[in-house]
Length: 522
Image 1 (cartoon, rainbow, N blue to C red):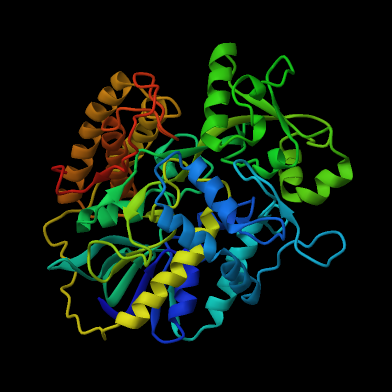
Image 2 (tube, rainbow, N blue to C red):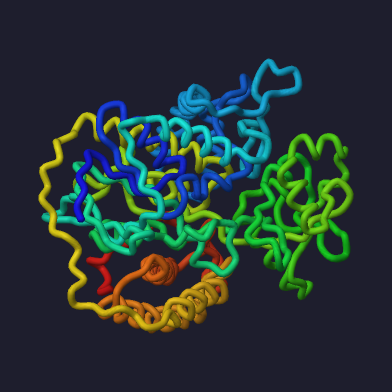
């Protein structure tokens, strides 16, 4: 089965929705989502969007804060481009129907402060900013007659010829068949890969699909060793990946140990408002010193009215698990949260494969460097989605591709799924145990050996059996885990989110890592 479109957008988070809306003004757009339309990491984002909106704030200050958080690896041009376009991006969101929280007088928007920021510059919609952004943009997309939405569709591979992307093979989960979609331009906006870790704040779909698709197509990936661990996820056996927003610490919440003592002052002068990598490592060390499975976050010294007004969703969710945050502390642990590296792009989302654009968390623009500063991610989604859309409009060539159908004539139906379930679990546990918050040469060496065995088994399965949606995700997950391990093994220093006990100091030079399938035989 074949379909043709002007623009193929793979992923329906903030980046994919923004690009679709911008491009639908001029072209026919096909937007695919691997689950339901609004099931993306954007929907789960709590904190907000960082932008220079206050009179006492400056663009230079936001740039400086971002460069500091990125620990020497940011591309200053990318940082400046994103932040200088921040205010217009917020205006675009407001014009698109996003309703941000106002201050008490109602005269202006309420801004909060998060780790690494020197000013209050995080605009938000209570503590469910991602949901508000996602729902608002999705409502506009649903009304746009130039956008065709394919829910429950999952990209299998990009179709390239002579270094040009011409579309993708896409698995229809309901019909269990692969369709061929040709496009003049293809955009990857599939989010991150934090599901490669056992504990993560991300939804189940964050299996690194875009990274794997781009890798197999021949794209260069950069800085894949830098995976951000959010310091504070709710620690409870039944609380699946529930994030406790950094905004709590921005509003005065304190981290305490089992002896009810504040400990961040022992690790960093910025205490709870230190960048995420610092806070995560501090919590990890505190847990190892005490032998405990978690630490606690306490905001109960604030008034009940203030807490419920500022954090209604977190308050309600914690109550479900028996924690009243107005009266007691919350058990928390670090969890994989955000992939700072990604497919290397320029400021227009272009990759080294013609007609293939990558935006949002799947991209590596150089904005984040070795550590993403809080609430810069949603800003990046909007700014670079609009930039990519502008470039596509200027360089558009009508789709005339005649692509071959997917060939599965040489494979048979799998009789059981133990390869999928076992290797999914084994990969995530391996990454958590060997490639987590703190790394070492020995652990990385063991991880390389173990992941190769899993990777080979998965690829053998791919060559001989019919694919399913679960297997497509597993194949991508294992490949991305292997790329992360290889990238981490090549960095002989501790910088930002990559901390290794064998090389605890930073090198004199900050050099981004680059890796592609041309460098490695997998």
